[in-house]
Length: 219
Image 1 (cartoon, rainbow, N blue to C red):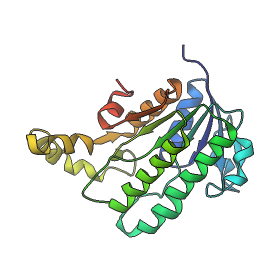
Image 2: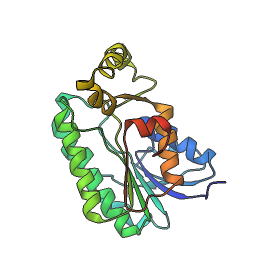
Image 3: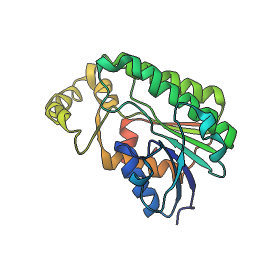
Image 4: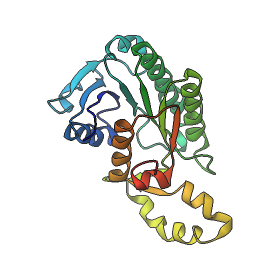
């Protein structure tokens, strides 16, 4: 039986956040979620809302404790090449504030959804996430960093048309590693991996790449 964890969650009302919140509650964990004013009603009833601004840790850092785990999911919805500036002002900025809040709250484990890299496209996106990973490393917290490329789920299915290309690329020695690193994962695989990360805290920094996410853990 997994140990019950007290989780502080950012991005709880987003694509990953909604599904993760439900899964954590079903697993018997305590969840408190950072939300903007007016968004608390979008949370399940058993989740305690913490009103604050993800871009300013001063608005919520004193509410992180007594959480032992902080899961940071804030990011620009439906990232694309036209949103390059937002990757710095939202994705990276919110990660920086989450690290500060985690340090202030003395959490034992920081869980961060980054992105697979390097990649030939979306460079502004993955470079902002790499900077965020560097912030986590500099903070010297125990952390799990997940690196999916694209998470398939409701409203996020267009890459399915690329599956034949992935199949071919994984069978060619020169493209096999890239195809696997930038492979597709499903929403259920991602949530299973995130729950596993919460229930199995890292000692130091642990990376879950696409193959590990597909297995639901670092195995």
